Image (cartoon, rainbow, N blue to C red; front, side, top):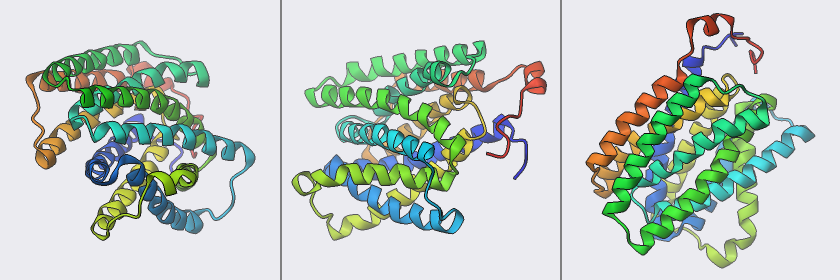
Length: 301
């Protein structure tokens, strides 16, 4: 492994992870509509455990230490709550609007990282987040005006709650990725979610229909691959650099929402997307002098 990883490479890996996750979101929205969010998340998690477990045994094969295990449980719990709330809301809200609401998470994570991880929040990161945040406001305002049904409101509230939990999980991922490899992070995040959801399964989840299993398996595989890419990226770049990459999910949500569910994208959405992408570019840029002097303390993780 190279002792130096460019922040641009880490950002690219995270962006690819988000794109893959967006395709998984599309599959999970259909599963959540057909059989409920709890059932969709539960079975995707257990299939994900099987996939990432095999990779973990090949690459690592040892039980994590106490510090890593605590982080796995903490992130699995917050991530599980976030995922369940998000997919419950996604079944009721158009994909573009859903993703726009989750953009609160990177903004919250940016400042949580400064508080919890001791990272210095650069002015470029603040400016980029402000620009992207303006894009979120434009999108949210346009979509709320267009669709204000009770189901959309409830779904939006669930996604807002999910975004807060996701912000916490992003910060935990940064710490998690510093003490464990990508395969371990992906496995134990899935495992904790699956185990925590299992006790209630007999009451709120049924056995998936035969025709749903291909979608569940593909969603689990895509989710596992996305988790590996994000864990790799977060081990090599600061959370404030990678957090804005979450905004690229909007473009995928708009395209996939239209292609699969016929969800049209408004002018508000298009304007917001331009602001969001511009904010990502601003936030990830480093001054030339800072790039030359940046420490490589995270090399080899």
